[in-house]
Length: 436
Image (cartoon, rainbow, N blue to C red; front, side):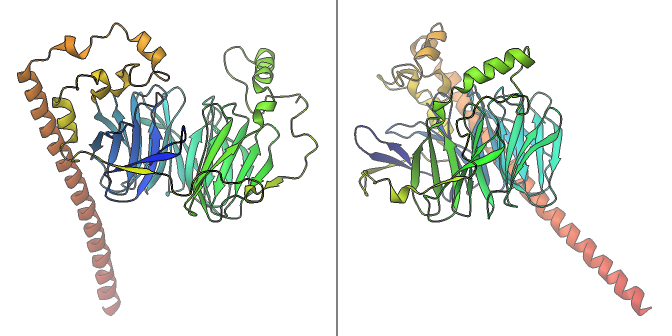
């Protein structure tokens, strides 16, 4: 669902997935929307009234998360087939897989600089991957539970994990050290989100509450009780003035923050000059502490907006259903069909990062100025024969991808059957040995 609140509340519903949608994310420029589903596919949508989409089929099990790199050129997907896959958005093609987890992978996130990927799995490990050599360079283990969600802080020096054991942990990936350990929830933690300053962390839990943690003071400062059931997701806005949460009570709550009352940038600059030359301050380096915004509030503040906030939105906003292209031919169709007369590069789905400012005047103006020397679609004049050949190649690659996926699935089944046979054989030998 794509919601538009101005001038009036309305929504576009994109129809295409055949099972539960597990994760969605906008690209950094906002010109593309990625979605993951239990139907084992990942879809890329152009967020407009036409709702064009492209479908990726490479995982052999439900896909749990999608995440764009900071430059929008790569997409990481995590799946229950125990793998993380990375895709090139420039040409919309598969790049490589990361295999080291031994159980379902629940989440995978890029670092702010795009050089690392962090992933968490039900095998009770959190792994750090180097995107250059495709190797696992770090491993954090937890014997009590597994992480439902992980993410980098804005500086890329730490990661936060939301644990099924009701805990939230902050790890320093430079020294492989657990910095902070919070036990503030009474049920599993499903999601976390860093404030853009990196000084605050908000958590969402199955106990029906949201918690806001002050990472500089190392304590809980707010408990939010707006939802009437488990809360599964939460996210700060780009500037940190707002955050949204969603849960099983079938509603999305939008919250306003008061963190902008404290100028965090001034504190960071002062500590940057004191301790570091070329790297942001460490969470534990900010000392001595200046008078804090929440000083004197020893106990956590509980907020229940149900008692204070009136819902001014209509209960039934107009919703427009938008059907996607056929999933098996989407990529070919969008490659071979030239843009409409007034569409320009906006409809050129092969490279959504090169959309013009006519389609998204506010978000892409600066980007298109940097790319003003790129040739337009009319100047490319690709011969029809070349276009047909590329379309045929895309068809063959799609068939090959599906074949590899089927082979992986069969190999997994064969391994499971072989394991069962060996176990039965061992039991048979044991029984014969006991009788003899």
